[in-house]
Length: 231
Image: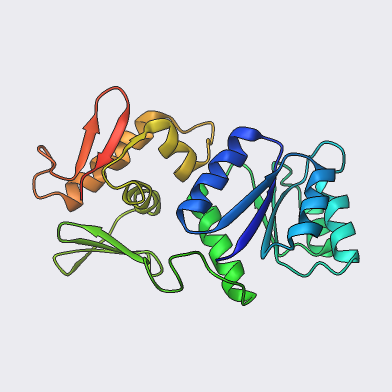
């Protein structure tokens, strides 16, 4: 099991990141400011550090510089609303491995985390390498690594966002996912995106994956809230 440290002062975002990482089997600790993040990184020696830049007390650049200067070798994934090229170059020069600009989808973050850990030979989540990478319901199978959807053995082409939405639902089998949660996980709260965008992509999935899109057996509407996938 990999240990991951998240240094992020936005409590709602940090909680969402922690929740999704723990579902994948990772052990997660959260620090809400620069000084506590620096102390936590030195104490726990995590397998991966997820680091915001705009932190109280000590910004992410200084934190990263101090860690690398003291021999910290774990991969570092920077999260930041600062998307300027100069900020990205500075982050990479200080030793960051990846730079993800806010807003982002949590599913994209999860994939980047897994690939960073694999690239650096770190421990994987509790599901283990290659296990749990194919999800499904009925006669539908979803290969996460190949980003391939099949129904009754035949490939079904879906848009990239529809694929991510399907995965978000599959990660909550039998549980209600609100439109808010789906927007967060798939679109990362991009301002032009509304709940109607979620509905449109759900309609696409039903047309292509349900036997009867007008009477879906698996992708169920929970009125006033969101959707539930019944496997």
